[in-house]
Length: 284
Image 1 (cartoon, one colour):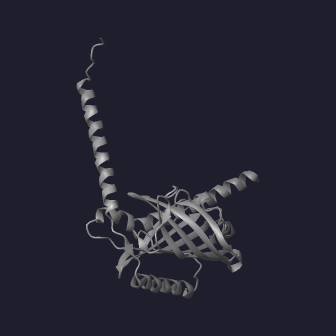
Image 2 (cartoon, one colour; image 1 turned 90 degrees about the vertical axis):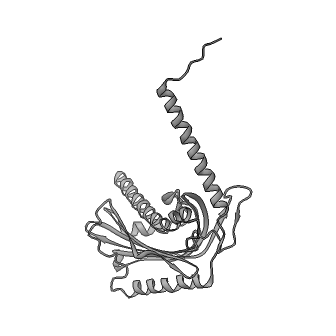
Image 3 (tube, one colour; image 1 turned 45 degrees about the horizontal axis):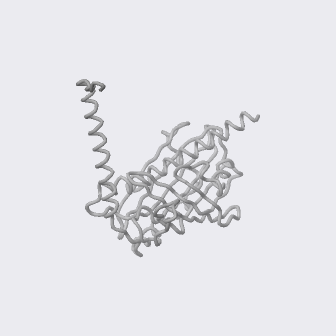
């Protein structure tokens, strides 16, 4: 019989740490599952939808009435390779039946052109190439060049995983002799998807779900400058408000997801444009 080898005091201490870490992760996972299971579904109400429509009407009127509506605002802190994201009107605030969010992000991409960014934003069948893992898939439902209808599947991982199917109406183009451009995207449908990519996959009824995202509009503007392509994107979204008793679970998702998603989209866009520039440089 082989003698039993007992771990050293240091080894026993390590085993205790490993055991406690495992127990902590197990209890954390159990707690999250239990909390998600008792999260009551939220409903998109007419007052919440009206609040969103009224607010985006103000945003679009401001963009249309600006002397340089398609010119990104000057941001002194934005330098090549950096990204600045800041809240508009506080970033997040409650409305009747929900919560509105408005964030703006700006970046500068040396060597990129408005035409290159427009081509990327219009690549409706391949958006996952640039925006994975948040964008799982995309396809054009209709594409007339300046106007299109696009279907997309999103994957959001923040505390819990949320899968959303969405459809958007887009409008985009170049102006000022191709030195400036714009792209506006307005959601027309958003569905939360349960058990995605399984035989039990199903869409919940639109507006009758966990309320992580009910509306999403994005307003891109970009301009060629001596320093590079200055890109700005404003994102306005509508979600449920924070349910009582589950703020610890929902707040990190509802209040930070709009900002985090916008920062990811701008960073991924910058990366895609720089990759395109590197490829073109090697080809030449």
